[in-house]
Length: 130
Image (cartoon, rainbow, N blue to C red; front, top):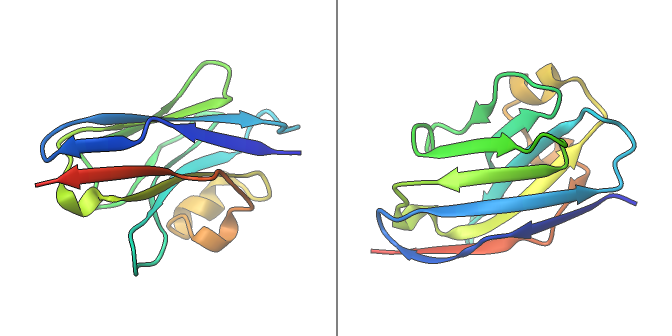
């Protein structure tokens, strides 16, 4: 059974930084798509950043380009999101997601749609104060 466990959320002032981590357990394939999504109260869950564990161009939402960096460890089982220059509008619950059903190009060309990801973590809260 696949399990994703996030950590690293918290509260920070605008301009500060946080690093989120996600550990994945139970995947039977060595390469798959992993991503970070976020959901603010009253808003849709949206993709923030994503990558292919086998290596490829990462995906970033326009709102976080230049501020957030997605990465993985050399075991391909841990995903990170380094968030710099945080803004109050980055406040949300952040979720780690993974999926192995499609080629990376599918997720990328469809802008990392929520419905294309079958495995989700429980979420970690990020709060940015002004």
